[in-house]
Amino acid sequence: MSHIHRIQWFDQQIRQLAYPNSSKLAEQFEISRRQAQRDIEYLAESLRAPLRYVAKQRGYIYEDNSFVLPHLYITDEEQRVLKYLAYRYSHYDYENAQSIRKVGDLLERFTEQPLAERELKLPVFEVNPHRLQVMEMLEQAIRARRVLHVLYRNGQDTPQELYLCPLQLSRRVEDDYLVAAVEGDGRSEYYSLSGIRQLTLTGRVFTPGEDGPEAPVEQTRPLKPFTARIRMNSLPLDSSWDGYKLRAAAEDVYEVDFYDTRAFIAQLLRAEWIAVLAPKWLKDKLRSICEATLKRLEEQENEQ
Image (cartoon, rainbow, N blue to C red; front, side, top):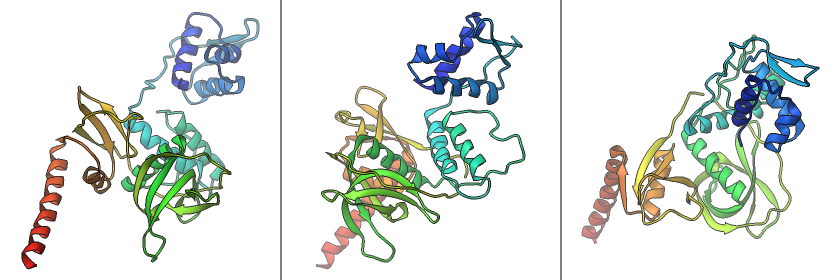
């Protein structure tokens, strides 16, 4: 359960004069005392709650009962972008690194409060749509221990077709990296995310060996995904469509979010589906690509 639900419960307990504390919070949600105390600190420091500990009651009250919790809900789309930026900030390694990494932790807690009221200039990271899509698919593969089918190009080398067992995302000064081992080979290596030309999650899973090391930074504007509506025969068992997450919208209609149009069209060209219902511009673009391909094939046949 998210910390937002825990904070709402804690707020309710205060208003009922139940004098909640970290022990009660930890017991209620089956979390550690340390995690519970972090939630209370977040309520006091980030949400500016006027908390006061009453030693006699061994719990907290509000010094000002007019305090209300700010609106804590954010959409799934906003959570994705915040998660991406949290990864960026938490791996920042330059000026004010320690303070800026705290911002990464703050973003992971989904706060909508001002992140830095003191004189601290945050570095700016660009949310690249293709990179965001790739990182989301990689995170899913790492969690599920799914083998990846990758078309990878390292510098000027000829692209390689690889089957990788992903272990973790990592960062170095010049790029983001995936720490992974070639399927059947226990040695882990760094693979630049910039070198990944094509990425697909296979149905195979692997048992991880030793994990590998660490990853870098880029530059930011708010970015929201496009949403496609697709008619399909059925939803995959794990709700994953080669790395894209599907949501049921009607009896046989599913919604799927995507950031990189080219990558998503490539998915449509190789995956199974019955109909693309929306958006219209995506259908038009897909139709245009298919018509252009058919035209080239017809011209080729006429030349023979």
